[in-house]
Length: 292
Length: 273
Image 1 (cartoon, rainbow over the protein chains, first blue to last red):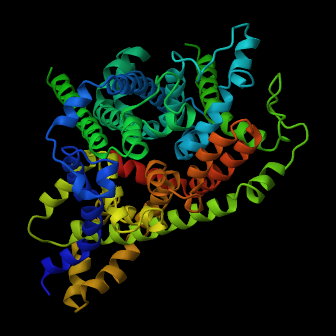
Image 2: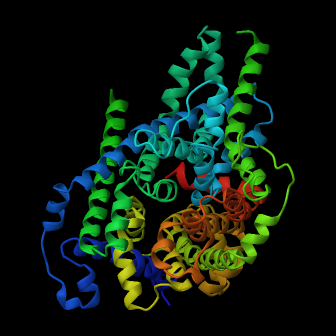
Image 3: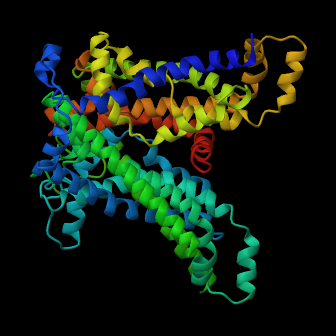
């Protein structure tokens, strides 16, 4: 048996699974988005019609799609910088030569990452409960008025963002910490001898050398945050007043609540297009920053 | 800055952050031990006045939590085991077996990491519906049997094994399967542990796909059961917290036990990616 045949035999199980259950469905989604596949087609495939780009055109005229898109961008634009800021801050603290009990702190800070989104979202629902939640109780102790965190359209998304930052910052913290540890200590030593302040060391040594890691972390986090779903599903059900309805939530509702698979596939592909465009844009910006 | 003040500031900030990270989890544990109704009081209690296991009893006796726990264990266990086999074989082939188009195929697979998994979900549901696999364990397990990330992880690790080792075995007349099982697998043990923990945790915590494909309660995993409980019994704080403990505790314990392997995989999977 030739070497190449052996290789393909080893690859077959994985490629078969990925092909049948991922790549074919992705192409299928593109096809579905060009049809009016709905409950009638689900009952009898002869009801299926090809509609071209009709679903995408409808999407652009649908206020709920723009609401969902706006909410998702709000979540990404505010959530990603806060998230990475928290990751970088804790990574710097863990990397400080002054820090004690590093292994313990690292474990504790990372713990939220491995927890189940649904379970911890349930905890936050109660911590941010308007009447009995500990957060409002703490506000009351400080003499502040209670906030209807998950019931007020202005506060629901910020609460979900705070939750996402708490849940996710540990992941990037580990990656950034590894990046920090890879910076040669001699560089700081030399800067100190030259009399550079802590801030200038951070600004001119740490940040430039950490940049490739930061770019990677940003791209991964942005792509991940665009896929917001479980948090609003459990904490707010997309409300109040659709203020936490995300694009993926819209896809889920269109597809699995109303069985409009054609429309839902268009939503899915629109999201994919947006994530791809933003990723390319971020990488371009990073490259131009490197050239400048 | 005064060095003592600096040390105090750094460690104080670390302790503060650690407290924020862990307090919600500790409160969950504490509230799960409170008698029904006592968490909804003013001021909200931090610790149970009389700790009780009643909520856990109610969960398992009335809410069928035992069933959901077994479902979660079975589904995550099956996915972890099957994905391990498929990803090990494919990762090994990409790292050590030469064939035309190897690098191009691998790059194409890595490029596909950009496609959000949710794009595939609608047609995948239809596919499984026509195959009669909707609302079955297989509907959750089968699509998870191979992962791009897992293949990448194994390849990265397997590339460090010297070719001479495999060539020597070939010259001695060993078959390809024997080389894989007897020479490669023992060397891949660390990445096997890493991959198993990773896949198991991801499968345990997964929400959206099981929510779509498991339509009947008898197949629910813990996250699905919890999400449906919170919609029906949202006023039963203590019961819900007990449910959260049952859901979160197994993965937290697994992580604490195998932390080193998990973090290694996380770094291997992203720093070079």
